[in-house]
Image (cartoon, rainbow, N blue to C red; front, side, top):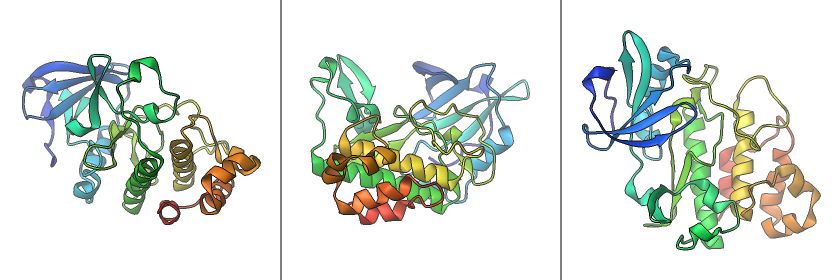
Length: 266
């Protein structure tokens, strides 16, 4: 979906409420087809200029192939109150407990639960394919000076339909390198950089990419590079190449870039 430009809230017609989150409520619009409106809660501060920078990213056509990249700002009484974004493709959703659910990363990091009984989980080879997909997503973003910042298990999607595939939603918390985010995200619990940097940087992103990769491969929502370095059993499961990268990821300033992980994920 290309940029839609600025829109007045009063010109939009919501067809259905899709989700409710900490920052706002998401609605499916009657038109354009396949477009969602994220309407921020009143207390959420929005930097409209920074949101515009994301929307006008020169490489938006590249990053939009794997993301619900923001496509327009929504204003009301002169204030930016929301954004427009494409809906995730149908293959990134399934039916769980009788309802439509997005295939969130969390389903891959926890033991199977009773309500997930009908969910087809990936094989070890497919997990590597999904990990490679997320690494490639980070590499594409980093190559175009975009920093992810917060990593949430609810905002990263996966699918096995048509082969392992990945997709990111709620991208308004991303930011251009050296710029503030349009909407300041919370740092998801359990995904923080232990070096506690004041600013979000490529190095903090690389640590979180290491968390994402290791947790996906091991099916463990808590494992860290530091734990891999300390536990022979985990090192044995990962193998020498991935263990080396995990060890480097535990050292601020030496964390491997995305392309390094790709080379270790055949």
